Image 1 (cartoon, rainbow, N blue to C red):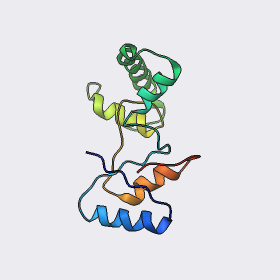
Image 2: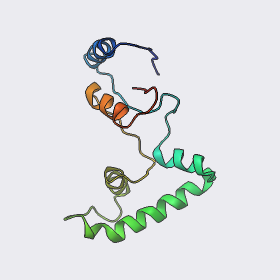
Image 3: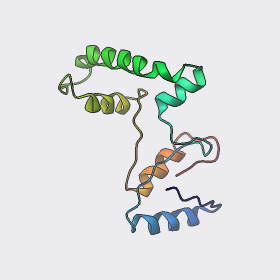
Image 4: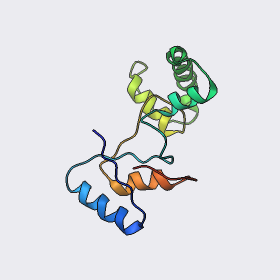
Length: 123
């Protein structure tokens, strides 16, 4: 379930965030208010006109490429079959994945929403 609240003042944002953190909510910061819950991989494919049916294949190619080059920039790597760990590493290094980031920290979500925003953001 999503709760939509529009705020105009920074103080309102901060007060609301503190109130919700105390209630155990999780947050996601997005730099564009118009985005739905869509991963970077899904959004990129949609914008490029890539059919959704090809996403699994594209992800597998990226995963293989990342695994083949990981030794160049990582001191230790996960088990080859630990796909979730590999995807989280790809995402950590700025690559597109099917994963969505969430946090219990309102300030962290706020940072990611505003970091490179050029429009209204969503948290």
